[in-house]
Image (cartoon, rainbow, N blue to C red):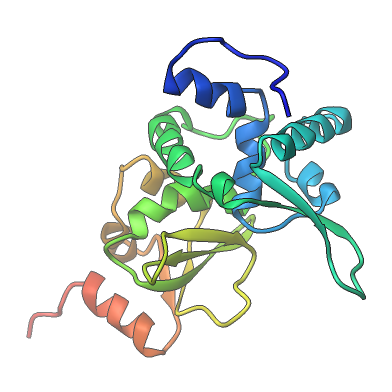
Length: 217
């Protein structure tokens, strides 16, 4: 499908922006990195986007081979959008943007919408090297899960994982923001009581043993 617009510059960055530089496109990618979504779900988690704009962006992304649309089997019989392998390759791009943009968060503005899974991308960096497996994170706004380590790159999903998580963390959006901005480490947040490691299984116990100070007799 021919591009509707282009910078017409023989530059890799310009070519990338030809594909994903339009308003809302990368935020749609952010939503779909959390898993396949119905159109209505996408619209609900992208406050401010019009239905015409969302439909147009999804059509453009299908044409650019970033997104595919498929029908779920009965009894659902609904259509969902999901990223292609090419689309999923944008996760490092969004991670870099989140790291760069974290200092801009400051305190939420009265007009700011908040979704729990929006904290997943900046938290991946804070969890890598400390936790391995599936981590479910519960905040006041809801929960999400992050998959760290394993055979593929780190990933995330909205809501709880399909199977029980290896580790469950309970915290709040302010701590997530501090982790994203590098103001506090995961170990410091656990030691200060800002993050609670929930569960009695081996992964949770190992994480506590790694992060909490050893009592001195």
